[in-house]
Each structure stands twice: as structure tokens, then as C-alpha cells.
Image 1 (tube, rainbow, N blue to C red):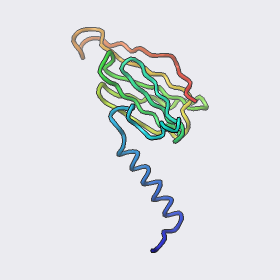
Image 2: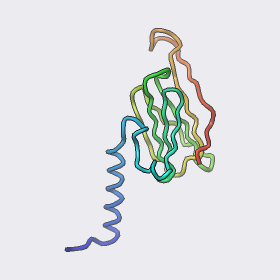
Image 3: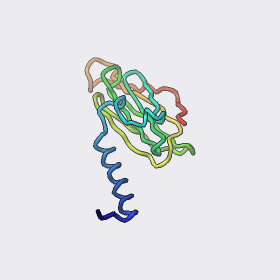
Image 4: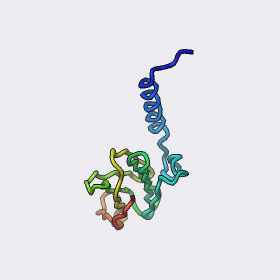
Length: 135
């Protein structure tokens, strides 16, 4: 049996993990990742918005907006150094995920809802929770 060079084998392994992570992205964050058993994943909920943060793999963040009060969920992310890493959003019934290349320091979860009976013509309002220290 012929062996692959060490760097080629390592590259293939990393590529395989990356493809597996992209194809295994679930519709609901509650079903995401196996690192939760190792204590790496932290779960947060703001009404019908679910967020997961996994700092063991350099800062994966998942967001899912289920049925409920808010039609859109947003999570604002900063890293351990206090740098703004932007926002990740998900519309109702959708999930979204991204990997930040530094550990997540804090998150703030927000939800947007309509104030009237006729969306999308009615005005909307955004409620935010308090900033949460993740690490």
C-alpha cells in the first residue's frame, strides 16, 4: 500500500472536515455539531431565535429563527479582543452560520417584528437582549 506524503494527507484531512462541516449545516442550531458533547458549544435563546457559539473551532456561530414573535433574528458578534465582527441574520424558518477566525467574545441577539397586522406594509420594530459574554 502506497502512503501519501504527510502534508498531502493533512491537507486532505482538513479539506474533508471543511466539506463535512458545510454539508452538515442543519436547519436548526439545536441539531448542529458533535462538539456539544465535549462542552464546546454554548446555546442561547431569545424568544423564537436560537443561537449557538462554538469557540473550540475558532468561533463558529449558528442562528435559527423559528416560528414566533420575530420574523427575523440577528446576532451581533465581537471577538475576544473587542473587535466588531458584524452581524449574522436568519429569516423566520431559516438558519445561517459562519466561522470567524478568532474566538467569539460577546454576542447580542436581536429580533425584528411587525407592529401592525399587515406585514410587510406595517412598521417594524427591533428588540435586543443584553450583551452576553461567551468565553
